[in-house]
Length: 201
Image (cartoon, rainbow, N blue to C red; front, side):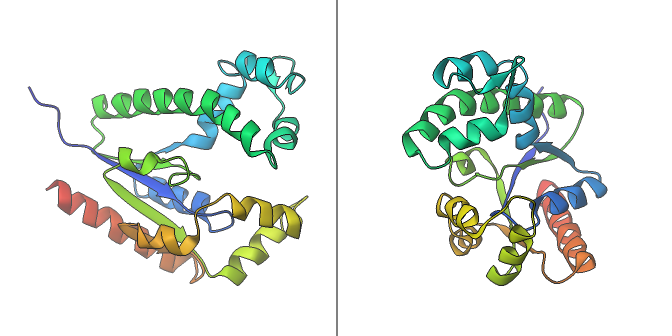
């Protein structure tokens, strides 16, 4: 017996665009959303900790990766970041595939995967549909700089490692605009869900 068709949706957006809020809107529509940041968090508490500690001594505290310590080691060191990604990305992909299969067996026909660095890691090829969350540059900047501990320099460093918003939008199947109010964004999300359900038949 062939398994029913499932649409794997990659949800992404640059820092400060409102991706987490948009993910919650998909959840509110009854769509399963898998959070890659949470997957990484779980890996840092267990499977990945020993390997990361081996490569970056001193960043693991009581068996758990200390994210600020790790960030300080890799943020402005591209080679170190690549070493970290080589450890973490395969583990995230394996966990993601396991969760997708679990959802398939539960009968879900649409699964949204919340991935901040979807294009940057080349993961877009693993998804049937790409949704990009966007907002104007001035709105993005104001949101990010309002965060605790954020500086203009840190924001610039993060942005430099992310695919430009204009390119993300150009490569998206659907775009959600988060600067027009929550109700407008919810309506865009509902329309995306309807379009996906229509595609499934």
